[in-house]
Image (cartoon, rainbow, N blue to C red; front, side, top):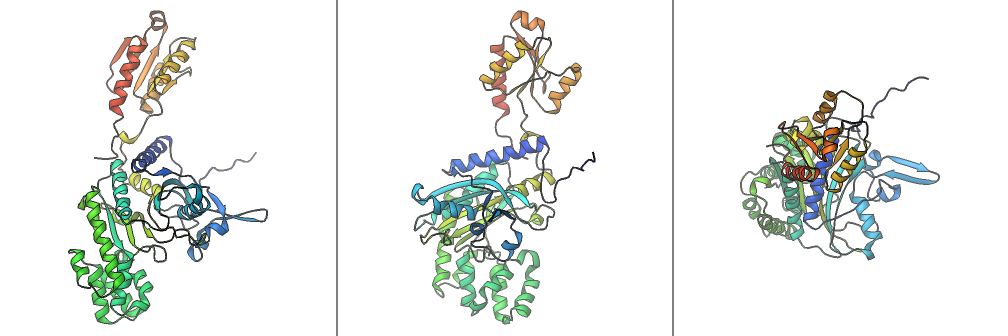
Amino acid sequence: MQKIKPRTLSGFMELLPSEQVSFDTMVQRLRNSFSLFGFTPLDTPLMESAEILLAKGGGETEKQIYKLQKGETDLALRFELTTSLAKYATLHYNDLTFPFRRYEIGKVYRGERAQRGRFREFYQADIDIIGDGSLDTLNEAEVPSIIYKALISLGLQKFNIRISNRKILGSFFEILGAGDKSTEIMRAVDKLDKMGPEKLSKVLSEDLNLKDNQITEIINFVTNEGDPFETLEKYKNKNETFDQGTDELQTLKTHLSNFGVPETHYKIDLSLARGLDYYTGTVYEVYLTDHPEVGSIGGGGRYDNLAEYFTERKMPGVGITIGLTRLFYILQEQKLLNEKFYTPPADALIIPMTDDLSHAVKLATKMREEGIKAQIYTENKKFKVKISYADKLKIPFVVFLGEDEINKGTITVKELTTGNQTTASPDMLIKGILEKLKKLNQNPPIHP
């Protein structure tokens, strides 16, 4: 029989066991962080009716989505989590309590060209707060504070959350007399990081035919390195929407301090213009400050009507997404994942020294009942191989159970990190293992 060469599709990531454990630990810490703020978990289907997923689609979405067909039904794999949330909130409206706060961590699929750090199948972590008719702006300050706490819980220190308000840029262009080209200008400004001020000026001049004085004001506005509110003050009382966006941004900044987000970890960035046809107010982008070359690892913002394609009800919301697969890939590539982030598959490896395995089974059962992850090594291998097995998997404790231990009602425990070995009653040593495990599992960081 001809053998098939095993391969993983381009743009799909498979991890080794130790890497998968680290990834799962990262996910669990995010779950803990989101739960701390009162968010409830949600798990929506990977597959939906194509009609649902393409409700607000078209363009690039139509090109990137994976479509399937079963019988006469057109199906598709979700390409993000927000559309599924909109469907869910509409479908279960009468069963939900608003504001509805949910988090979801799951896979999404995009049929785009796979490249460094970008995948076709990847995990996203979303948090959203959905209102019924209205939603207080305080929520817009809470969202970046949640992301701040979540990333800190992963051991990350060098990151920055860029914040702005969509109302400001659009109305600023109106003040300059270029409101009819607002969308095109915003698309150009959104690429400022990639093209730089000089190239942006050229695009505004040659492609959009803006006047020199308009271009100068736009460049000064979006590249401002001083106090952004001093810049905003210059245009006060010239446009109602501009003033509203400025007030919302100022309120958000005040609340961020109260939420405990230090100024070192966020920046008011007037050039931020993500989600041109989606976000209606506050917008966010998250960057690793030491690695600007990788771009954003997450983003989000305020939207006034989450489910407009499914219902007449007004359901405003605010949320943010972290690209987990991308973040993990970056941390892994930059060697920011240290060994302390790895959790061994077992706390203790029981090595029976007799042919009768019943005593080892009973001991493993007792240890598991006490909350210790216990594994029995039953293979007929040399003693050195058995110890090496525990060492390679970084299992901290090895338990020996030979005839002497069985006859005396004791066990022998060796701590591999120190080499210390103790023989005593099972109850005493199980208690000792639990105490040491408690010290070992104090949420170790990814990196210093």
